[in-house]
Image (cartoon, rainbow, N blue to C red; front, side, top):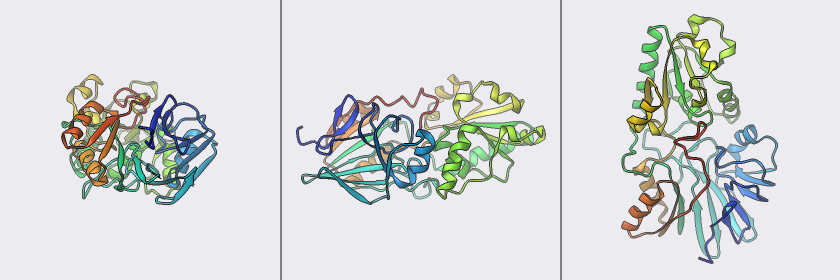
Length: 340
């Protein structure tokens, strides 16, 4: 529709009246970035706009860029489009993009996590519903099978697994994506069980989180620990890309596990040859997607990044005007540094 505030272009999602893009995957002049994961924030844009809490992680991942940072809820106007950013609850600095122009309000969610009463992610601001006419929603876990357990139960399982391994004298290697998931795991586990060792890719992002005021337990790099007895009691948090790599040899015999929403499906853990799988995601599950969409009051919903067809059918059945945008985002089920 000619009056749409966001349309698809080869470079990504485009706002015609504002002449800017949201999370473009090809180089553009002006890019509004929802968060710093690699499938949303890419190098090569001339100008970046993002939420202020994301500045540290964006610069850690992209290097020196021309970046304008907005506080959550702060608004700027560009070519007559009023732009503001609102918490998405996904990772540090993640934001929904609110656009207001010509009497319309659209919200592009990026990736988001809708927490329950006891499930707030302590490493970032919680999801904030934003009323709008049209809501662009992710659907990474947009199938009814995806329903998350309370995170306190998941952390209790992780702690029990770590304690049991430490008692048997073997390290507990826990794979989690280096940005977002790793920090959420560090903030949630019982750090009194033993030392916590992290991969260098994780520690680089830990520094940005700590600089932003996020409380994380003390962590060590593998190269800083020479005491094998210490390593045998350690929790080792590393990106899944190091599975089976020489980097893990220093830990001797170890148990391994993966924390991800994809662990909801038993076959995923079995195919990856893991000892354990812990279901913990930074994306909304099926009920969370439904709650988030309802809270916007939007009569039109555009689905992207996931199980679009299933979500569109469900939304249409609810009497909403529903469609989808195709993206060039990476598939979180396959890429080693995705964001599940």
